[in-house]
Image 1 (cartoon, helix red, strand yellow):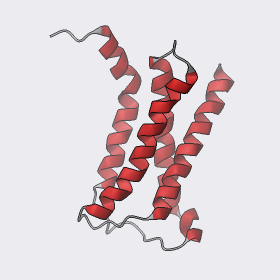
Image 2 (cartoon, rainbow, N blue to C red):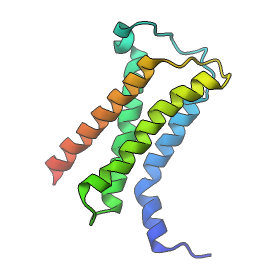
Image 3 (cartoon, rainbow, N blue to C red):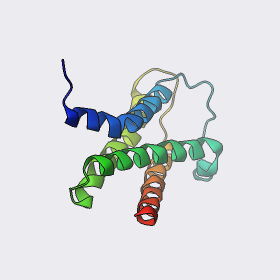
Length: 134
């Protein structure tokens, strides 16, 4: 079976983002006894929240980069919409899964805030480098 060129190009452009997304899901479903608990707003600046910020910042950065490479001829608002939706959905879904499934993890609104903070940070980081490079 021969894989079409468009599919190969899609895989080439999005494999890093997909691998990172799988990594996030693996972390989400891992047992939670090893992670510290956060109970207040000021704990948003704890190492746990910084990790959330970085993980989701990297995810949206990789998906945006792949999207720009894949869809060079499309308008930019269409290029960025799908990575933003995927990352935002993942940011909420990971916390919902932690609340619903009995894996020893607790969902937290502060984790969701940190996840979306990472999405915003990753988006602006991508925009900065995209405009800087050209």
